[in-house]
Length: 132
Image 1 (spheres, rainbow, N blue to C red):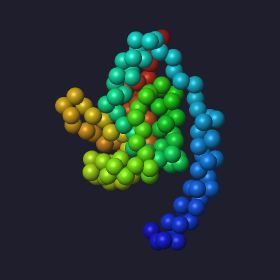
Image 2: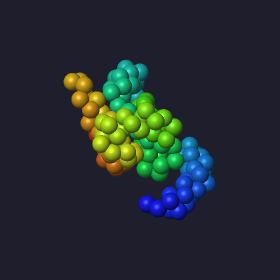
Image 3: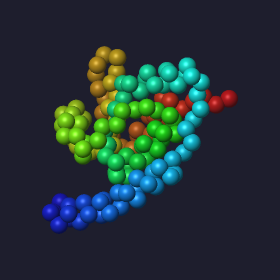
């Protein structure tokens, strides 16, 4: 991408960023209600997850809204603010693209999941409370 296009999109992000962040806060869904023990289990499970993102990415906002709805305390790693997080994303996931969910399993192996809709589906399947 040329320097003119990069500069243009950077300016658009700077102008719209505060609006996007305010909209995220104002349109957050209500979090699900879980019992204390159930939420403690979810909190424990979320310790093996980290979301690589940046604040004004619309796809990251979608994932963060779903995290809020599911009451998931997943660590957020901002690749624009912290170079070490950007480097970790590139080294582990193979590319610098957000959102990306790092899923660490019991053996210490990491799975790197890109695409906001895929991440949301994964979180729903794993953490959506059973109804009934």
